[in-house]
Amino acid sequence: MAFTASRDASGVYLIRVEGQLVVGNRQELKTGVSEALDHGERRFVIDFSRTGYIDSSGLGALVSISKKVREQGGELRLSGLNEDLRSLFELTKLDTLFAISDTAERAVAGFAG
Amino acid sequence: MPGPTGATVQLSLRVPSDVACIEEVVDLLMRHCCTDSWLCRRLRFNLRVAIAEALANAIVAGNQEDRSKSVQVQAEVCGDHLRVEVTDEGRGFDPARISAPIRPDELDRDSGRGLFLIRSLVDDVRFNDQGNSICMTLRRR
Image (cartoon, rainbow over all chains, first blue to last red):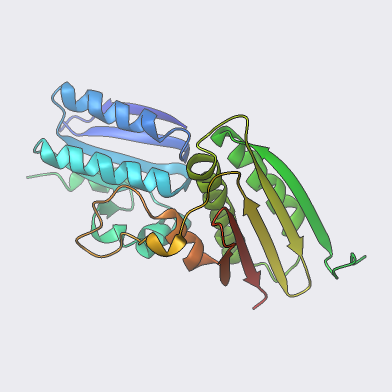
């Protein structure tokens, strides 16, 4: 997995995940968000439009990240889940825990106001 | 030509206890086992997830990522079903004690979803008595 991070003009921290988010690399994403929180970031979008697969450990990492962001007064949104990934979120009921948008742009726009 | 058990494909792998191997093993199994047309795209995805989760559980929870231990994978494809068995060298566990965090008050748990996914995506799941071997079956629809 590789991820790229950027800060949107409206102050949203956008992380784009490429490849898979699985047991072997989920810590990398957790560390990346943790460091961003330490630097004062509070509004996050994690985009999966270039992600083919997320395993249960990856889902657990997202839950853990979400908790940490909320505890620090922030908000996390997800975007770009393909049909297969969506089905995993629905199956595990995590679609009720996360705000999920089709695209990163819509997720970022969701923070407006 | 069908083998002695009637299977059209039989595969046996010994996998090191390294999570970095999971993707390659899943790809290999999918390449050799998913040759039948009844395995539509959705079933292939289900199978891929189930195998990956079983391997991860075996390597991480079962073998504790101990490189001196390995995971045995056996796959069998017959005309109307596909079976994959994953066995680790750990002490085993009681699968009945693992609950899936799908209730609203449990969603914040960051673990426990792997076995739930396996059970949800394949037709039959069985464990041996020790709890260190899982057998997953996908049937033709």
